[in-house]
Length: 232
Ligand SMILES: [Fe+2]
Image (cartoon, rainbow, N blue to C red; front, side):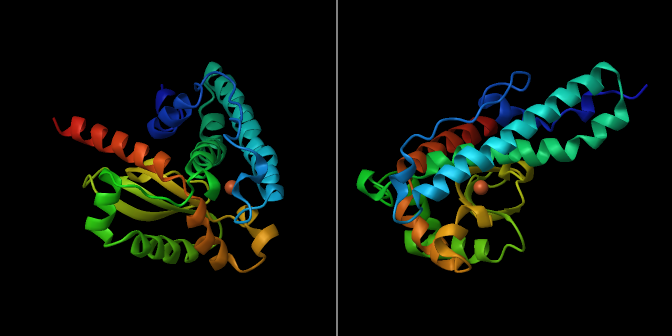
């Protein structure tokens, strides 16, 4: 008989979802850590309200439905039904995880947005990329090159223990390709179109003004510690 265990969500997705509230419990949309208008004028309150309350909420609702169906299929040992659900789990689970990181990655300019202070992350950026400006140009160039929808990421590469810049398609997560997400840039049209129309390069340029580098630096410290522990 075929094992049903291999058909559960991937280990990376399961771990990421568990950190957000558990695979078996209903997922919920996390509150924004600030008001809808926090990121203006870089990102309008209107976009933030729609993006958080509608788009993110839809990923969460569809993830909960997919998990319920998965549990039913597992109970019936219906392998075909479990296989058919993998796409919905990957897409909606990734959408939930990625957006939950994105909200934390941002903060208004008046509250420190865009300010990268001295520390391990700043040192690593300068050693690997030369400067924050060079890094942002690297991220923006790769992110602008995404065909269709996706995300640009600053990550810690689990193969090297170093910073890396990658993109993922649709709602795929960096963990699915062996990277720890530190900073995500949502390159879906829903993230910028109301403010920037078709000029997405201006969105990519401006978003660096509202990056919460304290959050990114904390993720970097945690990722480096986990990488070091895995090598011992
Ligand atoms: Fe989004």
